[in-house]
Every structure is written in structure tokens, then in C-alpha cells.
Image (cartoon, rainbow, N blue to C red; front, side, top):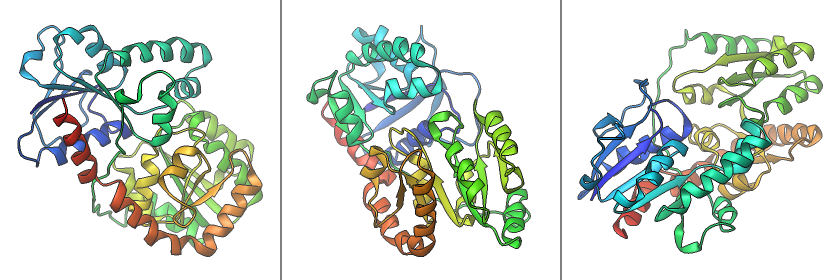
Length: 347
């Protein structure tokens, strides 16, 4: 099978890392020939694909060379939409609840316009891959079940060494030296990620510090909020860090307070690093793990969040093993690749 996988950019973002894990695992299978095409000019050297990569040239793209076109993101989906008559078989992976995601990231007007446009783009695909059962149910309102497939994102097992002289590790050690528990979180900083809930909680719980890894449009607002709440001496906003996962195992607890998620890659990454995890009680997270594996709290409920922290201190370490087993059995790169391979074979 000759497969062209099209992505918006070669950049260290969750969806691109999922494609990276898929490609690198698929490339080890027989009877598969893969090439990755990216749209944006800039290339992040941290993203290493184990197959040939090339910038997409829209006018000269040779559709006849590929049995399957697999798109990821609105711009690749648009490219496939306008060229659908040239494509033998089109697979698109859906990675968000389109209206909710666009509303949190931009506003309701943008959500309405581009959300409906994206639904139209997906309508011409032969198969739409949803990354959670909740997402599949969500899109049943617009597409027939025969068009929808469920394949969870998969993560690659990685061992990342870290020098103890690292600046962030020094700050973590400093918090511990003051007797503070260190909470951690990571991701693109938008309102959807719910980081403000943790800052509000820190006002009432002075034994915790908080490390936030990531950048985004909410970074300045969150920094100003921490200063206004007078907790900025217990918060560290690190900005973007390549391979942020390397810091997770140094946290006493990892928190994922998202208001909405299509899957929850960072949640699985934290489980993979064998650290106790607290997450918001949203449908996508409930699907991934149980109360025997992670600790949940109710959204926008500081009391529930404080209770979850207390419960995690008491039982969080006992949940690490079962959570890790769930990851191995359900969210590995090999399992993801095998399911995509089987899907491609049906083309």
C-alpha cells in the first residue's frame, strides 16, 4: 500500500506527535510504503519521521502515486476536499469536538463559521477516524456510522534522560526544599485547558507549588492572575519546552484540568511516566481511565479539586500500576498502527 500522510506542519504539537508515532510504527510493517507531506515551511528538528518527508506542493502533487491519502487538520482536509476526484481513497483523522474546540480557542462566531465548513470538508472523505468513542458519538449527528471509525491515539515508549543541573529541576528541588508539593501540567495554554482552576485552588492550599509547561494565548492572562492572587511565588510558567514529558516524573502529581478534550494525549503521557494523575471529570477522560487508575474532580469546583488532591496523596501511588497497564493495553503506538493498517487494507 502506498500512503501519503498530509499534516499542517512539522512541529512538536500533540496531533503531530501522534502522527509521528503512527508513521514510525507503520514503517516497520511489511507491504506499506509511506511518505509524509507538510504544508508550512518551518520544520522542527525534534519531530523525526522514520519515512521520507517533503513539503507539499499543491499543484504538482502526484495523486496517482498513492492508494490512500490520509489527512490531519483543516488545511490538509481542504486540500483533499478540492481534489477529491483525483484521490483513490481518503482517510481523515478527527482530533477535536469541532464547535467546542473552536469556541474555546477563538469565539462562537468563528466556531460557527469554520465548524460548519470543516463538517463540509469531512463529508467527502471515505473514512473519518475518531480518537475516542465519545467523539464518534458526537459526529454520528452528521455522518453515517459506516463512515466513522474509532482508533485511539497511541504513544511510543520513550526513555528520556535529564541532567540534574536543568533549570526547571533546580526550581522543583527548591520547592521541595521549602516543604511544598509540586503539581505539574503541560499543554497549549488556552481557556479550554482549564489552568485557571488550579491557580484559584492554590489560594486555599498553600502547601502546593505549580509548574506549568507550555505557551499559548492565555499565558499572559494566567501570569497576571497568579500575581493578582499572590501565588506567583509558588508558580513557574516555563513556556514551551521540547519533550516536556521528560519533566513529568519529577512532579508529585500531574493535573489535567481541561474543560474539553478530543482524546487527552498529555494525560496518557503522564500515566506513561508513572506519576499520580488528577484530571477533570469529562467524558473523554472517563473513557480513557477509571477511578482505579486516576483521580477525577468536577469542573469549576474548587472543593472537588482539593478533595481530589487529598485522595491522590493517599491513594495516587497505588493507581500508577493499573493506569500504566491500561496504557500498554490500549494506547500504545503498535496497537494504533495495527488498527490503521487494517483500516487501510479495507480501501
